[in-house]
Image (cartoon, rainbow, N blue to C red; front, side, top):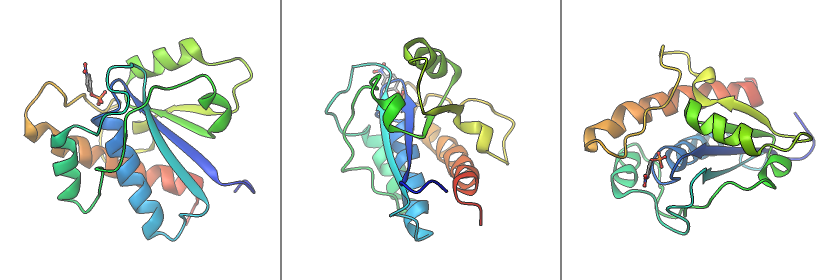
Length: 159
Ligand code: 4NP
């Protein structure tokens, strides 16, 4: 592992549903593994709709049922500087990936990945956007996020 902490940025469209959920689930897993000093996490949106806002109340409630606190997180928009500050930038879907590729500097240090590349228990390649659905849509999203978080943690810090 690099001598500096490994920095991971999760990115979706709004930064109020999927990417804060991914940040919270992954950070909780990192803490439980005792790796909090070695792996740092953040999340951002490709859009500017929800800058400064808390995650969606449904995302907060669904994560809380799994022991993950999203309430302290606040939305921000991804920035070109992120491509130099982070080691991994993790997109939730292809649209996020395309938006990131469109602004990525040619000398970016961050590696760009689709989050579900790291998942073992799903054939899905994108984390679906639960924003326009009902509360129930957040459960399968969290299942995918937990699955991919385990794989990503094993990639960064093989056990
Ligand atoms: P997210 O979901 O990208 O998972 O945070 C969305 C949240 C808000 C909007 C779209 C997607 N929106 O259009 O406001």
